[in-house]
Length: 519
Image (cartoon, helix red, strand yellow):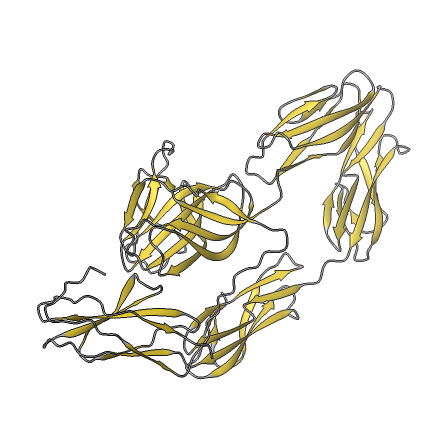
């Protein structure tokens, strides 16, 4: 609010506050980390840059970031410059598409953000991959949003960019690029739970070769977006692509793949080298654990002959002529065997442990909630025990409605509703939430009239004592006002001013506090 002009003869009046019965509790349930899990910065930076970046209300701006680690991101923090005027700030994470923001991954908003401070906004959790490019987008409403950014560490071709749309009320599901700017680093970061560190596995884990023969190894790197490795061996030779050539001496050798992203992490395979003269068979992998009906590809390595074909068999389950094994529906330990076609006396086998699949479990959040009439509430459901995470939503009690995205809308009536999330993989598995629909709170305010004639009044509200305040209603001709937009469990701060016929505005009245009760 612009500093008011003091009008001659006007006096400051203390507001008289009345709370009207009929209330509702609006609870925000934040995720609780399991014991031992620590919130850490997953992407972005906590450095406060020197440049001030201004974006008009309703226009979003996106900045490129690269995830430093893999993990679950569940909050975004942005530093707002002390001159920020936006009273509603949206934050979001987008996937990167062809060097621009693409699909919206998660977003949330904060009301009454604090200028000159870090503002942390919980968002629906999203998984990010270390080393992968993402975009953090910011949108201010009801005023100019002011953030901090920098051009100092920007590489060629990297920019921030504004949205094509200029009248947004929230961030779009798919980004459309407007203008680009020579800034690429913003004072914003995402926090969450970092996944386990870098790990490297090499397949096949064991191989038997004759001297001078070759085997192709493959390295799998997890926990980082950089999957490059360097190959070394204790005997023989190995190329940069993992193609190993056995030495001329018999023995047991090791082939090692070392992560380029984290050289302290590596994986290895054992190679048994024999002198030429006999047929030998090996199977990879040598052991595996599967669920009912789950599949595993096995590979047979036959050396000592030009005929490298093998026949497959299994003590339980089925296996194709190409070594693709399907587990049975009975738990137990089974063997998969490869027999040399050239010399049927030579074979090798792998061990398979088969377990029943875990039960499907559906959870819903929040479980109970109280909302005002005709107000919306977002529910989130998760499915474990199945690769099919699809949910069917329904109102199973009451007159509210719910979308297939879990967005519930309360009816215009005091009632108790139930929302059910049902697994599409197993419709017998579901979870329900209870919604209490109640009459909303209101705050009635009244004040003594100004001693000047021909004035109207303006009513302001803030979320913290001393402001900042937002205009609720101007040109009020009476000396009372009813605020119908309050939420249960919140605390609000009100001031009023008087405005004469020429538009001059008095200094604010004394502040009054309204603590909204719970039902």
